[in-house]
Amino acid sequence: MTIDWAHFTPWSALSGGLLIGLAATALILGAGRILGAAGIVGGALALKSGDTGWRLALIAGLLLAPTLLWLIGAADRPRIAASWPTLIAAGLLVGFGARLASGCTSGHGVCGLARLSPRSLVATALFMLAGFATVFFVRHLSV
Amino acid sequence: MRNILSLAVGLLFGVGLCVSGMSNPNKVLGFLDLAGAWDPSLAFVMGGAVIIGFLAFGLAKRRQRDLLGAPIELPQQSAIDPALVYGSLVFGMGWGLAGICPGPAIVDVGFFEPGAFVFVAAMTVGMIIHKFADLRGPAQPQRPIEQDA
Image: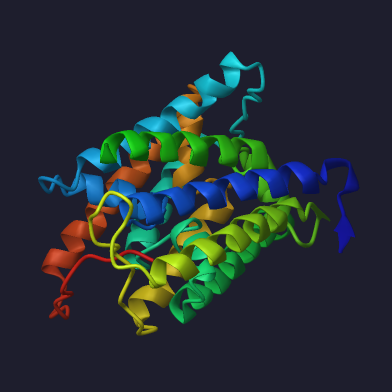
């Protein structure tokens, strides 16, 4: 294993992580809900009355965050390099898998671990393992 | 009030995802590439978020109601079942393919990144397929309330 020191950004990663933690704090203490992106989107698709508005408002906030950063001159536009077929396959797997597992990187990986939930610990270990294995396969084994 | 709070939470979450690097698929793939030039940065994202979350959920467990007066809903499921195991593995495969998970996917749509629209459309279809399969699947135990994470 070699460390990519040129791209290593521990401070921005940690500060971004703290902001994500604060967002999860505000949602659980303010509105009594878990900050899990897949659950919030998936729940919005159910269109249950009285349980959709807050989900759409949160999604709107996510969509507006880049604009907010752009207004203060701090936006760093990401580039998605993957091909469309790859993005379609990845999106299907992410959407289906996260709902089947009742959580994703935020729901299990942040909130679940913070709650010391054994289910979330297992989920996080497994999706990270699968992520490591997939990248290994795609980058180092495929021809 | 609840919607305004949710909007603010979404903004904060989105800014956190951008600042941390989670919204950048190349950064995520660099973190998942243990055998290549490994970028461990994203471990710090999880570390920072979990430390704050640990304090918040510790407090939440001792409260019945949120600040707006509604009951706090914490997940009740505790079984490590096949759905959790297979779902996490499938999710991880998709995450490793493109370096994108649900929160960052929505943020990247906010950057008007074309690939993000494709990913979010496919992700939504994946979620709908799950819903459909859940209804028609063979003798699924009835879950009392939909609780995530």
